[in-house]
Length: 144
Image (cartoon, rainbow, N blue to C red; front, side):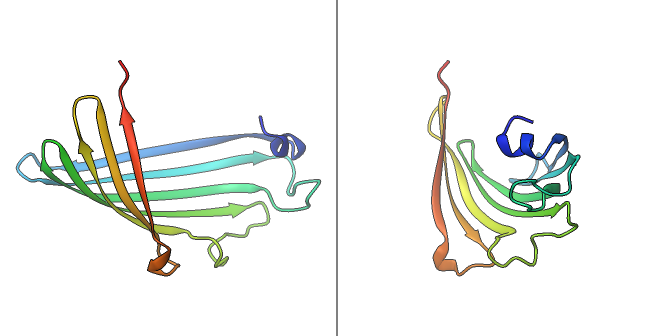
């Protein structure tokens, strides 16, 4: 444990498994991908001794994505993400309406050249009004 909160709670550590699956057909421009993550925290306490709040116990994430390869430089995608947490009190965050457990992200990977790829995408948390959607841009820049 490296954070102050983890040390105060006597957290032992965590274990995580990630599965990345994909399905494509060389005769189709469409492909499917998915990432699944399960994480478990080993805790010696049931609560944070200072705040008396529950500690993280489990996290589950799934991110299925549909891709369309428009050409060699442009891939259009729709990613759906879902995440669920359980704490040491056995509670999940699914009933907490302030928490957004799912989001939808349509976007595109645009390869400008061999060294620069831009990924503009929208991020809509599905339990919130569509007016709360944000626009994001990721950039991958290869220096070497």
